[in-house]
Length: 197
Image (cartoon, rainbow, N blue to C red; front, side, top):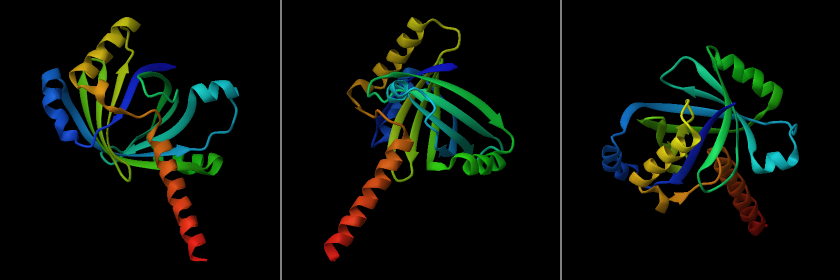
């Protein structure tokens, strides 16, 4: 599988990052509106592996493109920078694939976001505004032939220039945050109904 070194943090004011991105000499690649549909995965992996490196399967669609991307990835839930291993496959018919996967696996949750994609060498810098969740920054340093030491050094350089070592890190995926918010909303609804009876 392909490998990224990733980091995610909450960032209430994404605009505050623009001067730092300029200092980094990062360049703006594109801005997209993405819909990530996460599917339920059957428990087929070793339990200990699943706990330390949770597997996820999502179909990514973007308003700006006709095609979609099916992404399977395994990434541990850690606040620090962590490795993500993934398979990615482009599809020219995301609607049909979504219907098939929904029937076969069921939908776990859906994440919608506005994403600015900035680039520095092999590192993608995502400025994300996620519907119902807020604003985040995400780094993905892609392993593309460089040594592991070089990838780590580049990743840390980006974190340093953007001052992310003092940021509020997020250990989990947007899908986990979305499902947690749904559970909390349901819990509040149930408690409210109990108090009224």
